[in-house]
Image (tube, rainbow, N blue to C red):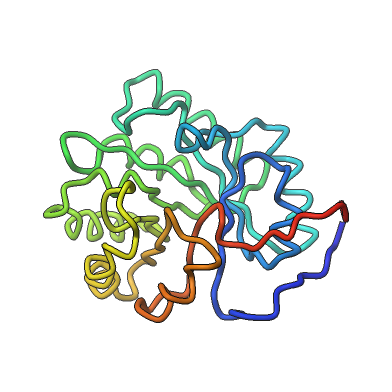
Length: 228
């Protein structure tokens, strides 16, 4: 089903809508979402959605020229994974490849930094898809985040999703750190702000940060109705 977007502003900004299953995807695309991050269990920070949900979302999004990024996360909680978690993540990435997903979103940490060993496996398995390092980035010690940018850029990661600091604090409190990350990353990868953003607060953020991509569950004014 092809729909016509109601969005008439911010055409240069890629608004990535974080969707918990398929339900709100049509509304988000109609309201101007240019990319979908698809997950389940947002109350746990997002986990991997089912194969059926991925298939349905891909079908609808492809009809509307919208990319789909799928969360690869086997459980809630921290981002330090054991061998069983890793096996599940690798298998879920394979499923995404088979379905033709545009990209995958994951992150793994160990002792305050990137879990390089696991990340290398996940990135290698993701061959042919975009790779995004999600807000596990905010669990990395701030003093090591610039080294993390270097490492992720060298591995070919496309974007880093970050709040710029603790998610319990307003993103506006972390503008200075986000600016430093954006400047440091330069053209090597994209720093994408997210967490606590809404379509109401977005203009203020865009006036302070040189970004072209933003992320959130409320980044789009969905204008829910019965049109679907």
